[in-house]
Image (cartoon, rainbow, N blue to C red):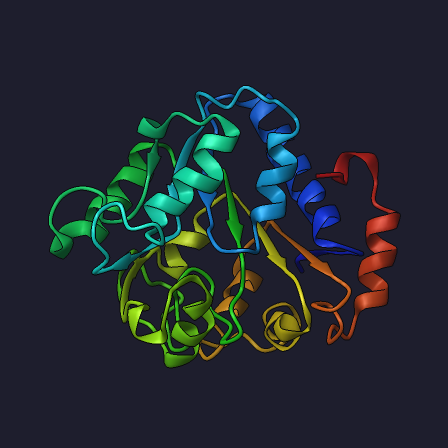
Length: 256
């Protein structure tokens, strides 16, 4: 069962996630982080930046990238990662990879898988979850064994991401994303979700049946998952009272 942490605010959630990253980096200054984009992880990056840690040796791998945006586009995930993660945290940009950032697109998935393996694997992967239940850009129907590959985005996902563009037509139709199998190889998964719009997908991922129709449910296959949500995102959780009880009564060595 995932460890579920229900907090009052995004800022509090970011603090809990930053605790996990700080402890990892203090143990291993060359730790490998899986980096997520979008609004969900922003409170985590903000909390981590405030701690003034030396993260210059930390290596990073982004979850996904749009296909078809010109180099340097402000909404490319390379630009977003640079703007929201690399620069505020003081990461070395040469140690941060984004899918399809080198070589032909046809081999980009295999190349990215090899790069993650060569780095020793991801130590801690930050995740969000979409209203379709996707993690990364693994849309419903994605195989639990899938690796980094090209995917076609659903209309719902494109609509959800319209807020980052001037019009719906500008949202790319394709992406390259780490697969569910890739994500499940990370040593620790930290999934964040905020707001009532995420409640149904979040409850399905944590407590529902294991199904490719809700890709986020793949986290149930992982031995170490921390799910951090606000009250609204956790409002559909059947066992919310138990999660609060367990979190408040965890043993010292169980703490993140």
